[in-house]
Image (cartoon, rainbow, N blue to C red; front, side):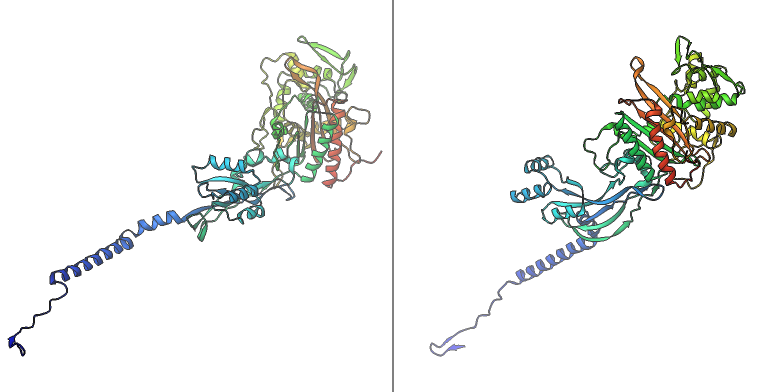
Length: 568
């Protein structure tokens, strides 16, 4: 092309592309490579590493929570609750999540019933941890008031708390659970696996602060504990405890025990102990109150053993039933020991020996028997053996083996010294007299049907002893205060010296009474022991017998036992 103005020929230059061909393909390659890497990464995360990442995510959000099992209820023989578990809420906190704001911490401390100093001190102790209790076992309503503050780091935990409607009345028999609802004493301990049940488990999703996002389902349902039905009758138990407490207070005694057994089944209808405690409020607890003395503690029974020793005498065939024993002058020496009666009773027949509670009469009869006769009878009656109730720590008592016994030891055994037994063992032994010669083992649980008795004496001897026991509480005897209006009752008093560092004391006693009612058709056997009465009288007939009378009379009426004695 020529330029018209200058006649110069010009050529048009080609336009160069914005990027060189090499750079363009490089960019395309980079984009493709980046896409491939991204696709590969996505594939790695979504396909290859998915299980691992899912497990890591679940570990941070998915939780397996325990579902607490409801502890089984304990009831009396009529279904009245004696121990129940109620739902409560425990508040806990993650100290590392608690707010730094002073106002929030003050408000939380006040809601918890704590001073700010105590709260700060507690938080400081757990500052390096992720868990601390704020307050255990609150009522749901009280816990919700604190949760409504929405304080960061504060969380609830559902639990159960044991409650005992009877309070101190049956505390030692039932026992207690700890703050984690685990049995620690008594039947709560011995039946722990049965009562506790089995916790369940559920799967939930929680946020990073521990808050519940969603419940995914239950893995295992909680299995509640079994229900335990005791043999005791709560109505009789209340009366027994009330009368026992009144007697202990009146006589300024150190304590006392009362055991009532069904004479037909061996079921323990009442078991009261003093001192006692309130299992619902254990502040200022006296450790002595924890002991179930009726089963765990033993003592020398004293004269209440005389009817049982008399069974051995009557069955021996050595002593004539019509024998008359001269107990004068009211004392005797054996192996450098002096045995005494309350006074010189002169000549006594077998019934008179029990009625007067003559140590001399029992000793002279016992020395006519073989060395082992009384020991064998006591053994048949369950002494020196575990009662078999399953109660933790139940005592076997002591019945020394008859090896090289001296004459004084054989004599002492006949009037209740030289051996030891619990109140439950004595009551069980007396069931043989009340049950035609067959002893019944004590049962703390209600029985579906009467058990098979254990032969311990002939029915003839048992009936003879029943009649003698009735005369032992006649109006002119020391056991007269055991009588019950409208009913024929029988029993034996005992006044036992306690032992000290220097042997038997002269100013400390146990007052004991063991009785059966009604005599015409025995329904209950009751043993009462008052430990060391210090005000006024201390004899078993004056201290323990009135308790037997009151409790037995009320129990017979509650059990609808018809009167068998006309008013005099």
